[in-house]
Image 1 (cartoon, rainbow, N blue to C red):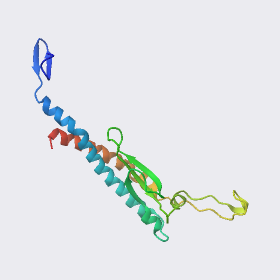
Image 2 (image 1 turned 180 degrees about the vertical axis):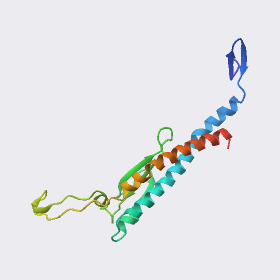
Image 3 (image 1 turned 30 degrees about the horizontal axis):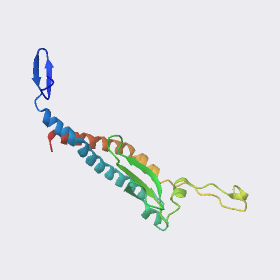
Image 4 (image 1 turned 90 degrees about the horizontal axis):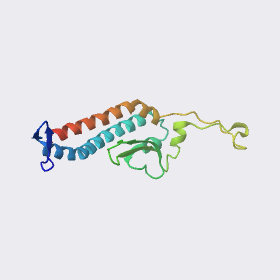
Length: 168
């Protein structure tokens, strides 16, 4: 039995497993197919989150609106990373960062979370600022699409497994 590749002992007989080489070939392809399908799903959901966040952001001069985007890896210099989506275990180093802000729209965080008041000396002596109310645009977009993102990635994994099994 030790000298017969793909053989299993069943009772007193030695039975070869048919199609074992084909199965091994398909399983070797699975990680690459899964990574490709997961990446497509992540790009699609990131674009949907960005589009929804852009529809929710308050617009004054449009700088903040134009600064919202996504990228593979780290956020661009000068922006605030508002969220990251990673492909999870087995997906390798797939990581998309959704961000807002740049040199002109440095105030993205203040719009999302608001600011506290500094009236009557408050925290900073001599300052008279009533604070601003939060006008969230990112987190509502992410919460609205979070379940869709998870199911989209799960479907991508299933699709890649079916593609590997079919040999395509």
